Length: 415
Image: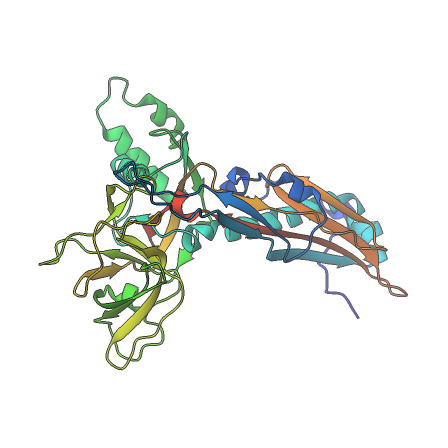
């Protein structure tokens, strides 16, 4: 099989320019929790998984008489379910006369490309593993005041001790910094004026990314629909796991709700108590509005209704999973976020990343290395097609990532 047509230069016609690669801001890879380093040292393959424990949840009663509650050992699984590769090929003559001294640059380009693909995939956790959010997807987040409000709501619900981490789009930083420069201060905010970066703010480290994921909303989000609760579906413990709404934009719309669409119960609906989340630990009423995400796409019916499977389960009765201040009732209303770009706030290192070694490709020479700049563990192997004048190089990697949802809140930026 003939290889692709390479575009190569004779050595005497050019000099290497030392131009830097157009790198991406791989902040998710570099800051992810790689606690499972032993996992990375083991030889693995697609589908390998590891489980880690989540803190148990309890409930209390105002009595010295014990009513025993079930012990719930919570587990979250990290699965290596992603793979990526890049490759290139030369003839023997091309390798000897054109690129033998240039192979480092090809290898570096492969690492940069793979690193960008992994970074973008890990960043998808901002969409898939968050149910709370700050921002409406219409008005920009462009001030320190908004960032402070986002952190306040994040911590009001419950937050791990220590510094938080936040990931925002690189293009929104200048406007945010500009608002800080306009605030009165004795030293004219020289720190941010000199750095022109967010850096540290409100006990949170702010990271910039040019690879924040985009979520494309279903019809209800795109049309700004206000949906009204018709009924709820309960699990065996009495928690709401699905809600049927009326008022969809159109009947028989297959794209009414998209997976990972995010919803918020509206305040001020006449005759109804404003819904609020309870704190994750202690189950006390917080200042957080009740928000949730759709776990699957949903179509509207002929009667302009849609049933949405939701996460998390919403429960007002007193159990260790209680998270509502009052029951969800027919007539309550929700709004749906439009299409948006999603950032993230976390604390406690809940974003996990594992990249196990791939097995050697016998009989081909194989190496497994970790790139310190991108944080990418990857394999390289090479060889010749038997009886043909073709040498092939392959760089590849596998990985898995997950984000513990209760430790996270999305930052929603308009497209």
